[in-house]
Amino acid sequence: MDKIIDCHMHFSAKGIFNKTAENIGLKCTLEEVQNEFKKNNIVLGIGMGVDICEENNLSNPQIIYHGKEKFPPFLAQCLGINALAINKENLKDTLDSFKQKLEENSTVGLKIYTGYQPYLATDKKYRDFYKLAQKYYVPVVFHMGDTANSMGKLKYSQPLIIDEVAVDFPKVKFVIAHCGTPWVADAVEVVAKNKNVYMDLSGLMEGKFKAKKQIKEFKPYLNIFRTWFNYLHDYQKLMYGSDWPLVDMKEYIKVIQSIIPKKAYDDVFYHNALKVFDRLPEYLKKQEKKIYD
Ligand SMILES: [Zn+2]
Image 1 (cartoon, protein in one colour):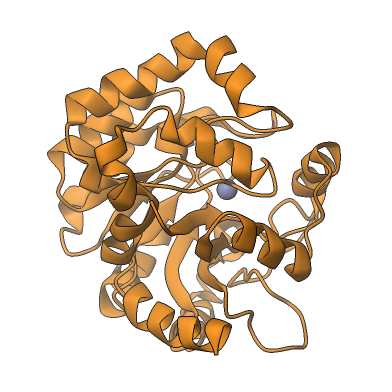
Image 2: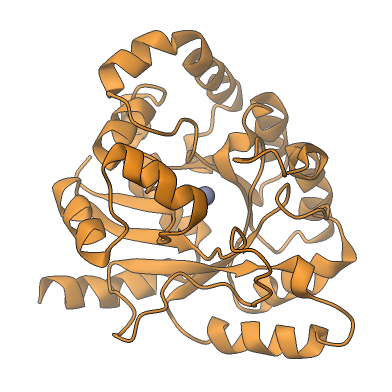
């Protein structure tokens, strides 16, 4: 395994990200991300746009980088959709602002916060965005499974619902984040049945830990993933992601390596992301030049 794409991370120093990062001893700065990437052979990270933890924030689209400098060459982004801020009156303007950002080549996907926001993936609020995703060749990533705070509502983040949007929008690629944990069997079934649905391996654990101890202590839990990935038997459908800064990159990579067969490392840690995020190969080619020139 010589290089990695981290297909699900955050670049946010707010709320829970800040708290967890502090506990691990991480700082959400560009310099730190770049150092960690270098140390771990990560060529690019896909950041999920999120401001939702900010109270009363009604902005759209949600982006990962607010700095004055140019967009960092080692990152790409999924635009976060804040459905709470969308109404009939502003829908057209909202869609226009997404279109504008989708024209930028650093945008490679859309992110929906089901569970944190009380709308099902099938809600009509989201259907225009699926059409947008199809038009701009970007996948839609859903937060799925457990929520990081007790204000979340779990019926919205149960992964079985993704089957319905996958059937209704067969030309759009969908990603179930966090393997829908703890509903791993449901998530895997949706991925197995639909050729346009994939999973990311981010957020399966978080906080400060050493991989070796963690792999031992959480063996029964990690066996669930080994079992259902074996059932799926298609490692082209899984992508590495960390949910950084909620974990230390080096330790998390080791945990994920322990639940994936060695022969699938290159696909899971690198190649699959290039196939799912259709606009990524071209972007990466340009960015690699910038990073290494
Ligand atoms: Zn995340």
